[in-house]
Length: 371
Image 1: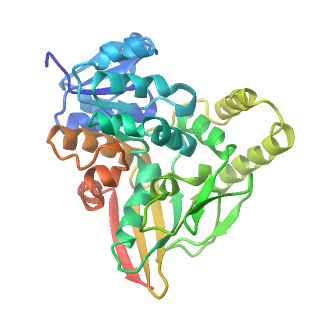
Image 2 (image 1 turned 180 degrees about the horizontal axis):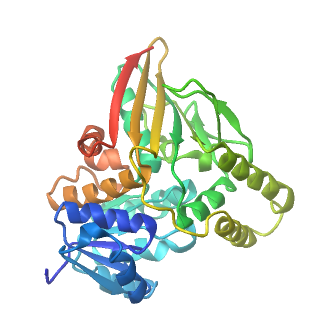
């Protein structure tokens, strides 16, 4: 076993953490599986068959800056998989910076992304470190499609729709409920514009005959990354699921929140969405099945007189997140990091490179047509 580990997965015992551990093991990257409970870490890592015979170590740590800094010191990459990130993520960011580590996470929370950009982006840049939130299916897959659309000269606007067919993890459910009750933004004429709360939209998705209902789902990470990008004038993101019953239930919860909870103090909002999220999903789902848990990402790119449609046909969004986390670690360790400070996954590693990594595992393919 290694004496020093270059990679720490914090929150490794959770649903997504185990998938990142699996994909690190496939790449023969030794790592520390960290969390707050030694027993739970050991029990959950034992459930990952791909870890048998691999080099990793389970380490329990207190969730405070000093303890996390001590754990991270000597490592090069921290992958944070603990959420809701806006509630408990900041000590991890502070500790990674203090320890001199590149930081990646799996958030879907756009307000968390804006916090990192505004409060920590310059500090990470000054230290020569990457600060890369949402290195995950949401919102990296939409970013891949948008970047490919922006390769077409004249395209300055991207309109994105996610369509997934996977169960959500316990942590994801709490995160998405809280982020759907916060201000959600899209970009219009290079300015952030707020979506109305608890409002559904009807969308069409490439390759589908049916129409689907969708939500802004926190607004998406793409408008955060493209805010201030001279290439992009407009950017909108909507999210839908094949499970209509689940989608309608979520929309109903958000409408109930507006009626019963909007005027309550902010700290009570967080307590409520955590509790309601636990009611919606109380047990971790099984690992995704690629033949079942398929997804589509539709991106319409537009300019004044030019248009392009990019469709990413894929499967297993959570497993994609595992690949993206492990691939980030591998590329950092190989010296292939392309940018530091607050960066998107595509700024850090290149859209075509990440698309290639997902395609090699049979998780994603790209189709481009002119409109």
